[in-house]
Amino acid sequence: MKSTIDTARLARNGETIRGDLSVARLPRLASLLATTDGQLDWCARGWREQRPEGGHDDFLELSFSATVHPACVRCLEPVAVAACDRRRYRLVDTEAEAERLDPQDDEYDVLAGGPRFDLEALIEDEAIFALPPMPRHDDCVAVAGDEAATAERGPEKPFAALQRLRRGPPAADDETTS
Image 1 (cartoon, helix red, strand yellow):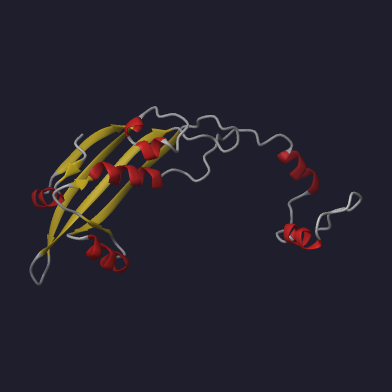
Image 2: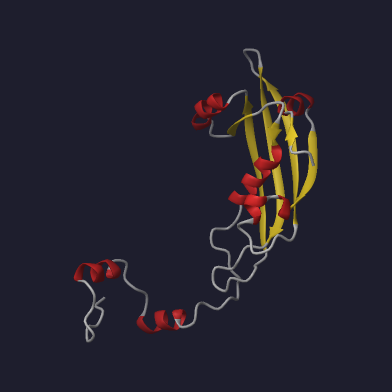
C-alpha cells in the first residue's frame, strides 16, 4: 500500500480503496503489543456532498478489522483481541479549519485532507484507539493471593485507603478499620 492518498480525488470520484497492513509495519501499534503477528484489513471510501448554497463538502469513511495480541494485564502473555471500527470524517483544507470546525461537528471528526494525506498513519491511529485498555484472558488467574485476600476481608470501602494515609503507617498490632 502506498502511504499517501489524494483525499479530494477520492471524494470527487466516490472511490473505495481496500488493503491490508502487516501489524509489524505499524511501529506505534506494534510497540503496544506482545507480538506483531497478524494483519489489519482496511477499507476507505470517499464521497462528496453538495451544499444547498453552493460548494461541496468532502467525506471519508474508514473501516478496519484485525486480531492483535497485546499482553494480558494479569499474566503478561499475549492475548488475542479483535480490534475493529468504522469512522467517518469530514475533510477540510487546513489544520486550522479542522481545529475550528471539529468541536462544532457532532456527526463527523474533522480532518485536514489534501493531495498527500497519510492514510496509513490514520489507520494506525484508529487501530491504537480501538485497543482495549486492560486486555486479559477470560480464564486468567489473578495475581497469587489477590482474589483470596479480597474474598477473606470483603471488598474495601472506597475511602479506607485515604483514611489509612491520614493516620500514617499502621503499628504492628493495628487492625484496619472499615
